[in-house]
Amino acid sequence: MNVVRRLLLVRAGAAALALGLLAPIRALAAWSKDAFAAKKADDALKSLGASGAEPSKDIVIEAPQIAENGAVVPIEIASTVPGTTSIAVLIEKNPYPLAGKFDFMEGALPFVKLNVKMAETSEVRVVASAGGKHYVATREIKVTIGGCGG
Image 1 (tube, rainbow, N blue to C red):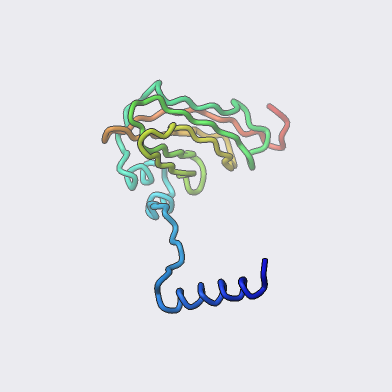
Image 2: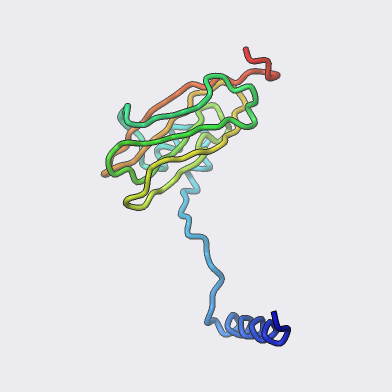
């Protein structure tokens, strides 16, 4: 790239920032500080407005039955609840149970794949929101001590 052109672009950008014509891009993510700071799963659900969710077989949790390394536990979640707009993942016995909350735009496939950290055997609770209602599915994941597989 031409050095003069580069200097011109840098200076033009700096001038635009100084004049307030450009603003740094802000994160588009909206998150619930209270839900992520909650120390109990029920408090996190209350902060998300999802307490009293009804059980659903339309939420599929794919995860190992036994995790030999609690530092990296892979979990895949898919929701076939029509109109799913968000999925929240809670790990009951973690110090901060809310592991993640994912929002979906209309037409998006409600699928999430994440790695979580689990210090001990615990229930993983997934809450899907659709049409102003909340649906829940749970799965227990056993974490072995020392990675012995039993």
